[in-house]
Structures are given as structure tokens and as C-alpha cells.
Length: 418
Image 1 (spheres, rainbow, N blue to C red):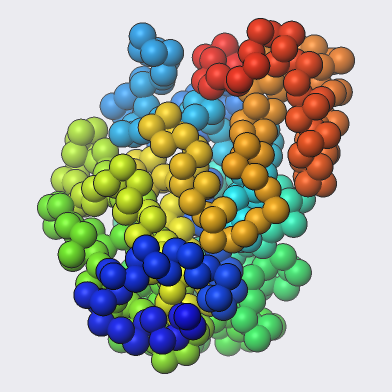
Image 2: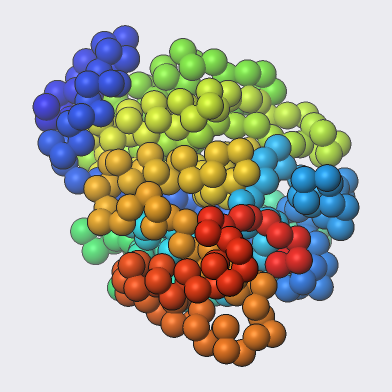
């Protein structure tokens, strides 16, 4: 069944199709599956200290519980343990997992180019991540947080009258450095630029700031701000607000309205999310933004199904790794590879579910054998094989280390590895 006819049905009728359409993936027009990525984590072993996004000035990752897990600001726990966003071994693991799941592009949450708060660190980490994205032959786009301008003004780092000049400087930097990159995501040769909001700049300011760019971007913002900003389109996001629980009927209606909003395939970037369970109230930062039950994985299955059957050319998964807000699809202690296996069913990737384990095994072994030059040479070869999609050869080379250590099946988060 053609997806255009599916989206014309009422929201209630769409519920009836959730199972039957599962069998019809091959008949739906191809989608570009993207994932929203947070490059803001710091670990003591790599950066010399645990960063705010793991601690939120409340938790201490040096504390390890009886299960061998560090204390971090999250309601779930990374399968590879808390990591550093500037660690090449982490980035390698992440992009290989994405590649094997059939994810084609990464939307990186980006705070600009200034040395204020942790913005410069995030910028450096973004540049590092892009190197690995391109190595994995994936694509990337930027989601610019223009709320940074407000914070820099409040912090006396930027004068109010300099805001427009600053915004133009940021866009010019993007134009000079990333928009023309062959790996940057484009529509009709226009770079796709997401803005989380916009929360600061207004429509006329965006128009002025984009004057003179060699590659004028297609601007995508949040749906409820579309009229204020006159963006090219919108991107969906978990619809939480006010601190209460958002039940399935409410987020279902949000998605139905989102997918009837655009008259063209380019107008809406569809969204899939696993749930929403933030840690903000617990750490004393502020009240919870809201809550969406993961329903043991069912929420992701349903939101991805709706995104796949929408008119949208792009699907953005929100998110790969926002642990503070509990929207994580990367492998975790609670869900293992469940979400990536679900994505594989749609993308019809040539990689198997078992292949998804290989980047994690490689990551763990590299951490364990960092001082063993012979082992590290072998593991470097494994990395080359995985980036070349030669999983069987990589698995054979890894097996000697798993057998040698008495581990036919890999374990995760040995704290000595981090």
C-alpha cells in the first residue's frame, strides 16, 4: 500500500494499520533515517574530569554500585558505560552501530563556535564526530541551538546589540566549513539546517543573517514556532511540556497533526522517539519537563511506524543519547540493542542483528587491551574490517580474544575498561 494513501486515513484508522503495515515496508517510498546526537559528554579517563551531563552537579560517577555501574545523571545506563564525546573509540563504536542499524545520517546538536560555558568543547567534539561519520560513509546535518545567544548575553559574554552580527558569524562559519561538504545533508542542493526553536532570532533576523551565504540553508524549526519564524519546514520532537505525563492518545494526536501539516515531502521531518523520562527534578535543576512511557519499547515501534508511513522524506530519531531527558536509542542496560534491531527491520540493511554487537565488543576489547600493542594492532584491523562492512572477517579476528578471556559472549561495562 502506498504511504500517501495511508496518511490520508484518520488517526483512529492508522491504529488499525500499525500491525499490517509492518509487513509492507518494502512498498513504502525509501526514507532517509537520521538520528539526533548529543556530543557533550566528558569522562575522567579521557578529559580529566566527569562533565556536567554525567553529574549535573548531583551524581558522582566515581561511585560504583553492586552491579558495577557508575552513578550518573540518567534513568538508564549506556551499555558501554559512561563515555567521552571526544574519545575516538566511543565515536567509532557509535557510528558503526548507526551504520549497521541502517541509519544514514546524524543530526548533531550544536551550540556554535564561541568559548562560553562548554560550547567550545561541544564544537570540538562535533568536528571529531564528523570525521567518524564520514569514515562510516554516513551523512550529517546541524541542529543549531540559538538559545545560546540569550545565554551569552545574560552571561555578559555578548552584548545585546551584537546579537545579529554574532548570528551572521555563526551562519557564515557553517557556510564556509560544513554546508558545502559532500557529506552534509541537502535538499535540491540546499543544506538542511535544524534550529531547536528558534528560541531567540525572529523571522526577519534569519533572512538578514542568511544574506550573502553561498549555500542558503533550508531552515527547519519546531512546529509550534512555525508562524513566528517562517522556516522552510518543521521537525517533530517528543511533545512534552508542563511536567505531566503525555499519554499515547496525546502524542498520537500530535503526530497525526504533524504529518498533515506539510503539503510536500520536504515540509516536515518526521520523528520517532522511545519515550521521555528526564532526570531534572531529581537533580534539583528544575521541574520535570514531562514524561512519556516507553511501554517496554512499544512507544518507539509505534512512533517509528507512523514516521515511516508519513509523507516525510526524512525521519529523525530523537535521540541517540540524551540521557538527561531519557530519549536514548543507543544500546543501554535496559534495552540492549532492541531499538537498533527495530530500525533494521525498516531500513533493510545488509547487516544482521548479531552484527550490532561487534562495535561494542570492539570498544570493550580496545579499552581492556590499551597497553597491549599486539592486541591493539589486531583490534585496529578489526576496526578497518568493520568500516569496510566485512563483519564475518572481523568476528573471526575478535573470537580469539573472547575465547582467550573465557567469554564466548561479550559482557558490558567492566569498570576497569573506562
